[in-house]
Length: 298
Ligand SMILES: Cc1cc2nc3c(=O)[nH]c(=O)nc-3n(C[C@H](O)[C@H](O)[C@H](O)COP(=O)(O)OP(=O)(O)OC[C@H]3O[C@@H](n4cnc5c(N)ncnc54)[C@H](O)[C@@H]3O)c2cc1C
Image 1 (cartoon, rainbow, N blue to C red):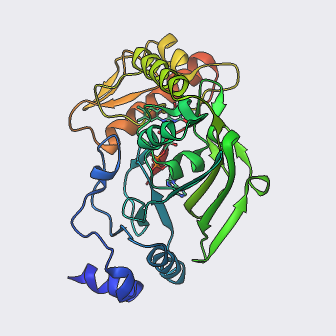
Image 2 (cartoon, protein in one colour):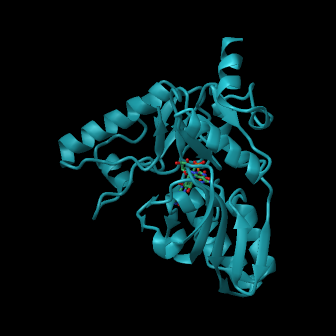
């Protein structure tokens, strides 16, 4: 009851129509960990999204965009305003090799859609349970390619609640990082013309490669740590004998040392316990400080 009053004070009635009150964050993170959030929104229009972000700023709170939830570990989120992209309008406009698409398309259905237009390039992301907005924000990459290689511009709702188009040249992209500050709503890509057969066979070989290297049988967030220059984080974990280490229901995969799996009812603390263990052991034995690739929200 107290909570509802507080929400009414922060957000106007229009914004409150898209609040999800009964959903737990667990349902919105690929590793299936998370409690209820104080503010969890799923806006159905870009204008409602702008309203929510504007009210968030007025209240002096922070917001967190969530796409596929494949890289977010939720702890105590406090008053952070969590905003899901899933119910925003979906658009996809194709003009020659230029594609303008809403950020809430999931990678795998977007790749399938592009096969119809004989447009490729992003096949290296096949199999990732992510949305386009999250992959651009994280500058997702694999097999030597990054999504920013194909980017032209993004449209965002900035932290002031205003729509803004930002060209790639005005942004900075590094390893699993971008300088984008706001909620990405639309993305323009320049893709490559390829035949349907070539794209489909590239997707199949990427999927086969991923199945060979990565564990897909339990929920995870993909690579937990960034690869330090000149090393592979998973290999360092393996060399420290940490594969298979378990705290509660969280376990370091036997198949890939950089993946932490939820083998049942793992908690935020279980996963953080493993992260601390890995960082300590790798530092003590190898003198290397591992940096997190996943986003820990706590
Ligand atoms: C099995 C598996 C394999 C994976 N393989 C790879 C891989 O090969 N390469 C790789 O790079 N990653 C990989 N990942 C990690 C993950 O998929 C990527 O980081 C991806 O970019 C996250 O996208 P998402 O939509 O799930 O983002 P989320 O997890 O929802 O969010 C990630 C970050 O992006 C922000 N964000 C999300 N949506 C938006 C938006 N619309 N606007 C602005 N910011 C936003 C969030 O606030 C958060 O900071 C893998 C994960 C799994 C589970």
